Length: 145
Image 1: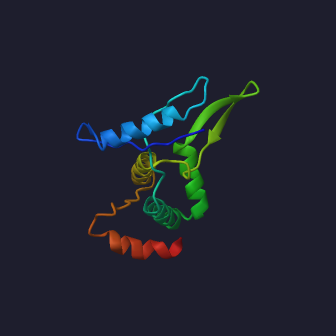
Image 2 (image 1 turned 90 degrees about the horizontal axis):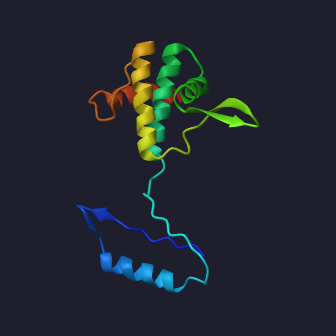
């Protein structure tokens, strides 16, 4: 049996503490005899659709400005920033991850790296979505996605 109980801590206080403790107690009472593991982990949200749309808009711009296919731009940045080394069967290899498994913070960090790299390596300024010029940027490049 697996049981998930959501807990929210805000301003240093567990929200609905009595209710949470009651649910935990109920779950403990339902356990079968034997050893069990209780794990508490931070709830992370996967990247949002708006983050993903922004990333592809940026890829569209970089693609158009560099003359490279948009998928190649995507793969370039995944290779540059989402790679890791691992050993399989005694051989060290580089594994390149994609963006679909990133949480919102990881994806935000990834986009920040892309923005910085595009500026330094290609001279491309990718605007912040809150910029007054963003709507013009979006209208210019979203049709290339």
